[in-house]
Image (cartoon, rainbow, N blue to C red; front, side):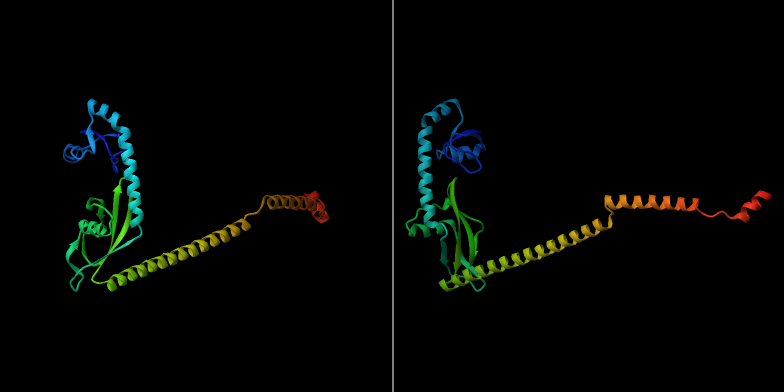
Length: 238
């Protein structure tokens, strides 16, 4: 089904775009929630009339969303939960729990705007995304622990692990740089050696000239050799 978008959506389009979507998605979500209109002649004319209002409303939502993001970005969320000895939670931490956490701080974020990369059923530090608008969002970490002290330990352990990874990365880079430098130096040495073994144009010319001189000298030397009289007499008698 083709629809006219009344909101901006990730991977779908901007306000006013006519896009093709699955019938169920259009009938069950987009159209009932006034996020899109069926793309027929009547609705296209209707959209032209309400376009400016929709854009103004969208800009207002973007502005408000950015203000909310400023309040929560770079903030660590800590949840204290009971867990078994192996770290398994007695329950789980859901988007609704996180939404309630923000509500206690007078920040309105719907569970639908909270995206967990994985279900939280054990203690640990997890990544999550807050998406308030197609154009506005941020990434946060949630620290789930059995106590404030354990939460701090988990955070410190994570920082140490990051530092370790960085250090190993630097070592690998240093090793690669050394190997690359050694290879370059070896290539340069070989190049110099090869160039020194190849005679230059000048040297080749000089060698040819010397060969010519040697031939001329040898030829003149043969002309000036003394005549063997005995040999000459013998040849005459014959």
